[in-house]
Image 1: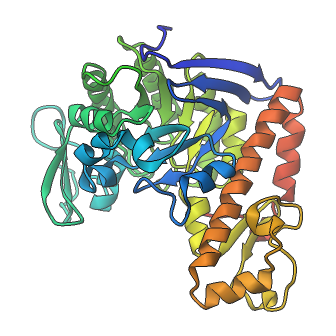
Image 2 (image 1 turned 180 degrees about the vertical axis):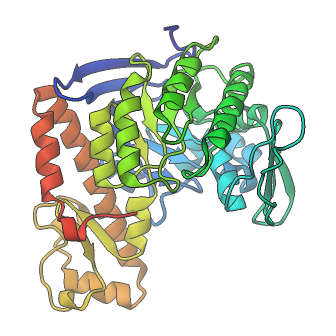
Image 3 (image 1 turned 60 degrees about the horizontal axis):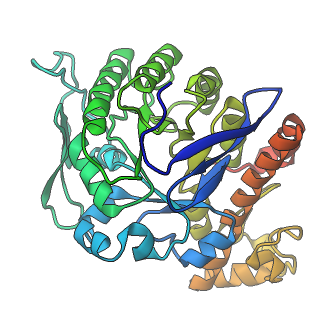
Length: 406
């Protein structure tokens, strides 16, 4: 495979499991080193809600994700660029990754219309269009801002230039993400268009030292996924890493796991493998076993704001009456500021029911710390040869009747 082109970006596998495809690795950017498997907290607006950059780093996170769509619209790329790029703007001391904004286009529409071919009319069997804030064609996404209704156009080239000005260590190509239950012809069209957009993204100038990852689509059609991964890996100039997009968008979870185990290890072993927008602790364990290195998901922070503490033994839903006079911390063995600080479940419940912001901060710290511990334990287990036992033990600890769910 061709070596990645971004200056200062490197990737090295340190150890692999003899059972499954789990691996421990390290990648370097011009600003930081990241050990994998790793979980990236989602800083949609350049901030993990309720936490400072120092708070997020204290959970063990070595890389954070920023949302291109939201940052582009507000405060705008000129503001961010003028204040030192996303790292300087947010005061985050480690590596950063930005998505392309394409998934927000998917979300704005509530669905993606059946993609038209590169030329010619849309298929006659296309569903009747529904009212949507976004349209999709060969040039990209045209959408209206959810903030003020202003019209914007996001093309593969614009996505690279916008992310270049935002200035994270890693940016993502613009892709087409079909719903998980899409028929094969829709998925094939999304794969083809994503490949064309990949070539356009790679041909667009970006800042020296900023890595660019390609995105493999294909829904749960393993043959499409593997063929697309091979196609993107062979492009010149080359991507610095490859991501699996379009999972956890409506497909059954067992089907997602089966596809991951068939596909993830087939991605180029000399580049980082990133599973986008997934998931639960179970998702992470299965995907690590399949060969994935990087993850992001809003679940731990979103669930914290909904009063859910995620633990090694399942969810603690803090508003439940059974915690009214419970003096225990969320997890007595946890070393996060919430648990090690001795905050009782009863106190956390009181704060949540009273609408106090303090509980959201404490639960967010706890959840991100738990995710940090999960991937840190995975890295150690892969390196010392105990990965199968670590995975089995961790899965067994998660209570089947109270398991974490999206």
